[in-house]
Length: 135
Image (tube, one colour):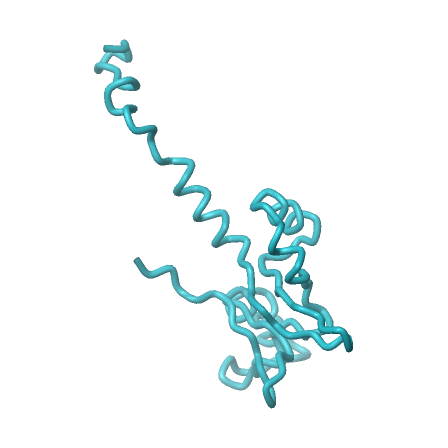
């Protein structure tokens, strides 16, 4: 099964400086460069023009993620209004290290698949005939 990559961390000299998503590339951020006063050809638009900068990335602390439930994460996503959360770990000196990236759409796809799994005996218990009557 191929789920595809929809988000990439942008790294310079070993440090994360931003995040670029498929929506950044295909959505309104890149479209704004096709119209005046920013009119540019698509091949001239740089990642730095459309990516979300480090300072603007919503983050979650690693310690929080370790104890969070999926429900907690979805609530955070709803509150922040983004599709990706960067997971960071802060050391004693205050330096942040990236530990991961959580995708809201990936969680929702996984939950959607799980919600549609029938119970083990549903093939017998939930069947109806052509008239809608239970057998």
